[in-house]
Image 1 (cartoon, rainbow, N blue to C red):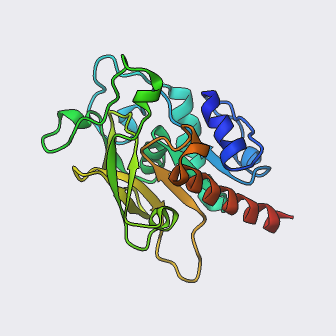
Image 2: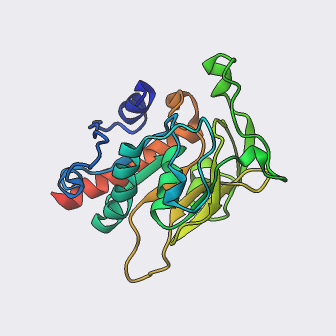
Length: 233
């Protein structure tokens, strides 16, 4: 993973980062999560292999990471079972969705009605990660509370996106073209509240301390992690 994710945990969440290796077969995920207070699923250059969510073949040149798939697709339901707070970013959002039974568009930009959400790789990183479009935030949702309103500007560096929502997920944000850009876990069980799980398609880790909305996202995750730590103790 890139250093920007590690720095965001330190500077944005005020937490201690512990890096988990992606191996196939994966390590003992239950043992790993048992010693943690939160789980961050980062973005990546690779995409989930499509056989995990459907029958269509992968397109030519699609980068895959089977070891990461083996780790993350199993770690998401386990984290929920253990009540571990989860923050998922870009590929992480897609992993959450697939792990809970959802599916993905492999090429959002090739589907009529959707915009091209990819970055221009020839531009400087500061331009690639700059805010590029508005997202509409769900009324009464977690992100709307963080933003203090119903809209926020975010960056956009992804070619894939949510097609069908995973079980128990509700929409937190949508792009102007209707693409789901953020979700949270809400299985509708008043007697058994769900653990914190927020997944976003954009990259709030980028210069997190300079963007109040991005920083607020990591601070909300940190608050859930600290509550988890207090309960564990």
